Length: 129
Image (tube, rainbow, N blue to C red; front, top):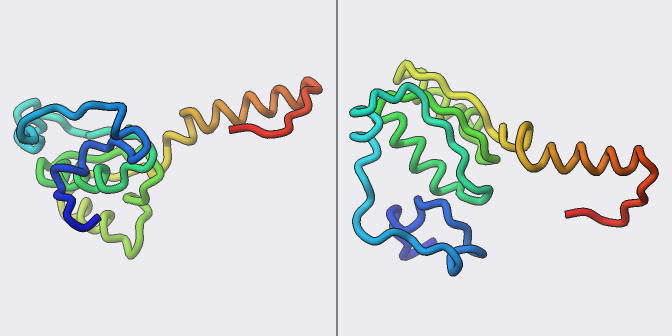
């Protein structure tokens, strides 16, 4: 990602949809300030799959604001390498949970349940996406 600034990648728009979704003009909002002003206790991350850089950027914002973080996308924050994020949240006195909760209650699990239902009802599935 050489040459791309944090501001350009924390939007969470994937490379396949970046031409379809217009980005807002102007500077990035002061997320830490917004979280503090609104007295937010917990940030829930439901960014699109593939937005690892965006997730990490928002984790940093949540930490700086003293917020807990629930990660619903498959970016390993709560269970990540070397307990880096766990340690930082513990030091901040804030909870961190998740890592792919989206697949537990989102599109992935719905897809699995429906395909299983079709198979149980005798539908022959050749492929699924």
